[in-house]
Image 1 (cartoon, rainbow, N blue to C red):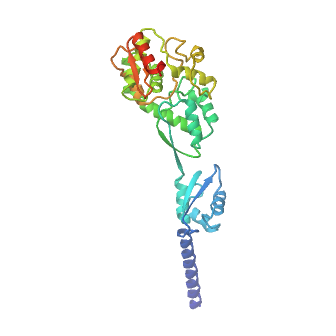
Image 2 (image 1 turned 90 degrees about the vertical axis):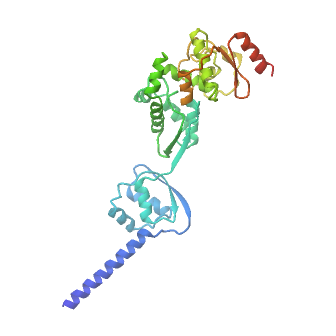
Image 3 (image 1 turned 30 degrees about the vertical axis):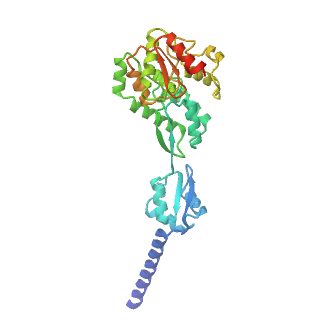
Length: 335
């Protein structure tokens, strides 16, 4: 009787050992040995059964109860993150499960250059696969969403800090825009606000002026000079006569506007046409970088009141209208 009992125990141990060995082999052995990247998407609200089916359909794992058992052992059934994944085969079921629970989704980088307006940014995000341009633009101008960010403006123009951001495909526009605004708030810190107060400028005025400087020049050395011109004109009660403000006012009415400015455009009355209004335009006309913000707070000490493009990325600055007219003839009309 003892021999029979002992034999049964031995058989059970052998079966258990074989099961454990087989299960271990399943956990650490890739279903496919072919080197290949397989892109899959785990939708929001997917059950573990649905996840297993997606993995099986894409030949990442064998459709087996063993994968479910592995997930139970790892307490991972409800820890799988949704999103887009790149499974670099060969991968074992254990590695696949680890990647899904870590949420190691594909990350997309999107760079927002300095001086881009909300229309540009919406298109950049769409091209990066991060939502439709129309939907993003709508969110940028949503009064409710803007208010939730603590901003008292009609759009997020000027508050979307230019930088490189990293997002997963599943990231919604609200999250992306919120991240950009947070980055802006981190850059526009207490030191900058203190400097603005010392200059007698509100941060709103600083952002508007910085957006004008950003659109007028990309050259770091010229930014303080451009800033000085605008500030000098404001002090003297002169119109700013800034072409990019005219363009922005038109683009608010026609986002597809992309032609050269003509006299009729300069005569068109909008809250942004600084050829027609005195003072600053209604709001920022783009999203300026830190360099342009600092240029407004630290303008060059000069009496310049005018500048004209030399058509080579630089400008000719003048103190009098007579000097300016000569420069315009030299660099513009003479061409």
